Length: 146
Image 1 (tube, rainbow, N blue to C red):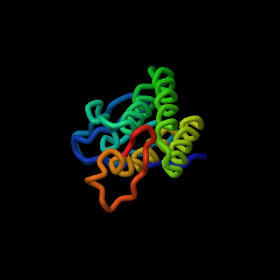
Image 2 (image 1 turned 90 degrees about the vertical axis):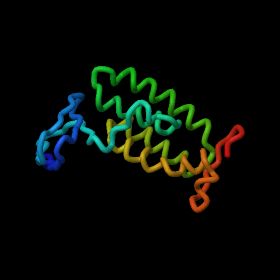
Image 3 (image 1 turned 60 degrees about the vertical axis):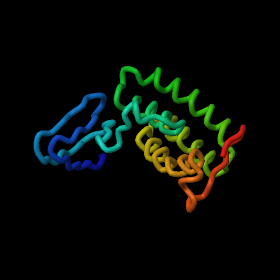
């Protein structure tokens, strides 16, 4: 038997469940009593925010959760985008994390993949904007990267 997942939402907050968007009008707690694919509004990346390679990968992966009808097409695009990133990055930690993302998606654990990708955003920022990230470790890109 699976554990029940209890989620608390604030007024006007959205949750995306199996492709449906729900917005609550007051503070509420809900219990998800079976396996369900969901995203909280705070974890949803809007299309205009997908401005970097990892954010684009994240956006594609979230489409797999938010639009089950288009999940196959999104999965194909995800694979192509991920393959391109694996060819671009040369940092061993970044590559290991991207391979973990690939494994998670292959196992149907898209939410875990999203969490892993979110955790890479700061490292990507350090690569793309090294002058802003003096205290963060730099990860190198091939082909003329930072």
